[in-house]
Structures are given as structure tokens and as C-alpha cells.
Length: 117
Length: 113
Image (cartoon, rainbow over all chains, first blue to last red; front, side, top):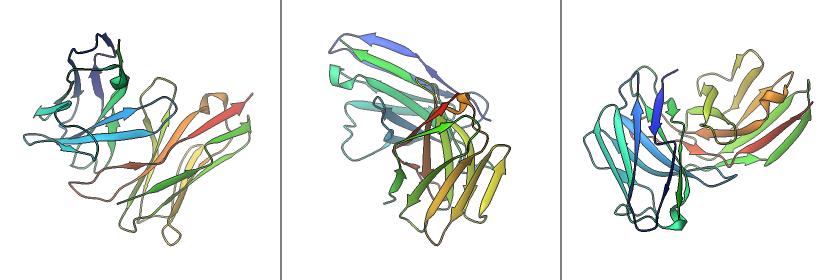
């Protein structure tokens, strides 16, 4: 299957700082990438959908000014958590989809565990 | 929008037995149904998927069945092994550029050795 990487895998930051998470599709061009948030023992909660070269589409209740998403190329999307607070601590996972022959298959990154002190 | 229900939340089976996990969906337009396995602290991994033009798909010990009329699909794992212990998520979506997966809440499968 296709490979998606995510960096960093773990980050600890102080309250009020910003954190950037990168999501890369390594062996295919991802026209669409997705950002999820996952709480312990819970399902994946979609935060936003990003398409290369256009603005991200945020799910209801997700603050776009808080969670900045940039999909500048077909292999890279970034999520920036601005002015992070302890309640932003979570497991953030990206996924990428190739709209070609793979169709609707989504391939997930390994996740980033964010801890805000 | 789509709503995917997954029950129960936990399932425990004896090693070697079969496990069946069932999901229901609400949107008749959905035509793609993947299953993901997630081990603790790891990424969800696609283990099998099915499209609405078939009723069943099998891959070694894993199979998925789809009943479009009843709007439910099930994951079947035969000859379970301890390494099958994980959280399993079902999802549903439709084919299209703006489609997005709707996930069930997940089920924790425990295989007792």
C-alpha cells in the first residue's frame, strides 16, 4: 500500500506556543489529505479536509484560526495548532487519498501525539 | 449526512474461534466500506474493503460481507490469533471528489490465548 509519513511523532510544548505537524505522501500524489483528532479509546474525529492548492474545508465546531492547514503541494500538508492549550493535547493523525486508480482508499500517517503543558 | 453505527464496543473471543463485527450505515448513496485495524498508539491500517457492486470479499482469514438492502456490513475473522487483538473501525463513504469517510466508534477485540 501507499506510504504516508507524519512528523513529529511526539511533541511536548508549553501553553501558548504554536506547533506544526507535517504529513507527507511518500510514493504517490495526494490530491486530498485529511486531518483527524483521536482521544484515548475513541474513534477518529475528522477535523478538516485539505485539497492541494485550495483552502481547507473544516468540520463543524473546528476553529479554522486555531488549526491552520496548508496543502501546498501534492505530497505535503501541514497542520499548525496555534496558541496551544492543554485541552489541545491529543493524538493527531493525517491521511492521504490518491483520487486516481486507488479510488477512495485512504492511507494514514503514524500520528503525532501532542502534549501541551 | 452519513451515520455509521458499530456494536458492540468490546468483543472477547477464545483463540481459534471466529469473530464477527457488524456495522450499519444510514446513507444509501454510500458505496465504499473499508475496515481499519488500529493497535494501541499506532496508525489505523486498512485490512479489507468492499464496494457496493459486490456482496462479499475475502482475504485469507478475513472476509467482509455487505447487505445493501439492510444497510449493514460485517467483518469476519476466522481462526483468531492473539495478534488480532486491536481496535477495529468500520467506515462508509461514497465515490466522489469531495467524499470523506464516516467512521464507526470502533470495537475492541480481545483474543484470549
